[in-house]
Length: 180
Image (cartoon, rainbow, N blue to C red):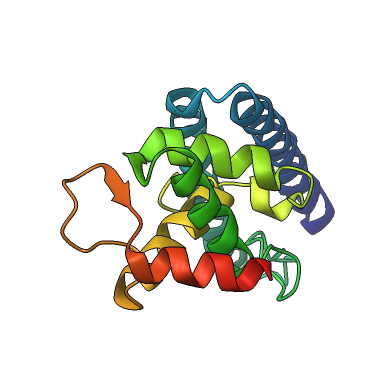
């Protein structure tokens, strides 16, 4: 097998997995819109497995290069998130606070996520709808990181039970000041 055939074989594999990942991303977007976060998580885990398998294929391609002593083209199959392509963490603060106020000051995680999604869905980029290595969708991951930041800032309660998000008085003040 010559260099061109080997490259073509690996390219076919990469393209196939890219198509699968694209479909997974589309399905995640649909499931997010339907507020089916269990399906989102399941699809995210599937996408994570596909990416892991792609990395294994890259290692195999590199090993082929070593074994055959040829300069086989190694494609960079890692999708690097370029800065500015996803919604910044700061954009999630007000929607989180507003959602909690609308929900009576505290709510279960999925209810908050559902409200935040409705408030922000028109702002999401394609990158926001992709999964991250943990299996979560990027925007959900960003909301959770934002929550941690907001707890440290005193905008959300650090003492609320697991799975419950609760706004503090400081959080309410921050929200109302930002709306002026």
